[in-house]
Amino acid sequence: MAIERTFSIIKPDATERNLTGAINALIEKAGLRIVAQKRIRMTREQAETFYAVHKARPFFGELVDFMISAPVVVQVLEGENAVLKHRDVMGATDPSKAADGTIRKLHAKSIGENSVHGSDAAETAVIEIAQFFSGNEIVG
Ligand code: ADP
Ligand code: MG
Image 1: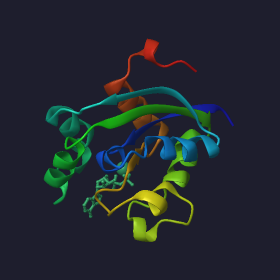
Image 2: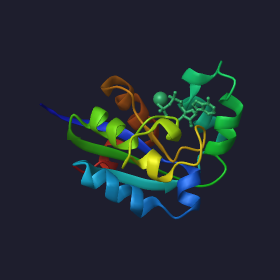
Image 3: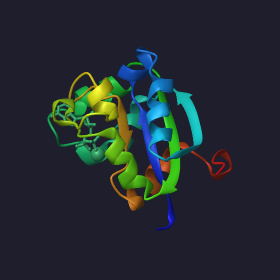
């Protein structure tokens, strides 16, 4: 299995509750390496571009408002099978359906305010990483 990278966001509901370290501990315990990380305040334009795939969904406006409501921590994670490994440790989108021990089961407030984002495929990860990081900011 080749080493892969994925894109991660610690969302506003989690940064507000000072959970960056707790979430990073779960990420690292899952065998993923944080090879880039920065805390930013997303602009509305950045959030709309990032979630453009959900533009037609009824929750789009609420999602963008949420993502710019407080700082987020954007990250690049590296490891074997990183995309799937990260999705596993995140848990299901809806925390009430997330497996025990996952980030969303432990920390998410609701299906919208669900603490973390993770890329859904290696191809998506490349696009998402490029939206927030330049190559020299990623140190593997
Ligand atoms: P995931 O983040 O698990 O990949 P999606 O890509 O389907 O989930 O949705 C993107 C984000 O949109 C979710 O993480 C969540 O913050 C928000 N979201 C998804 N479904 C809903 C919903 N039914 N109501 C409100 N917000 C939602
Ligand atoms: Mg998604």
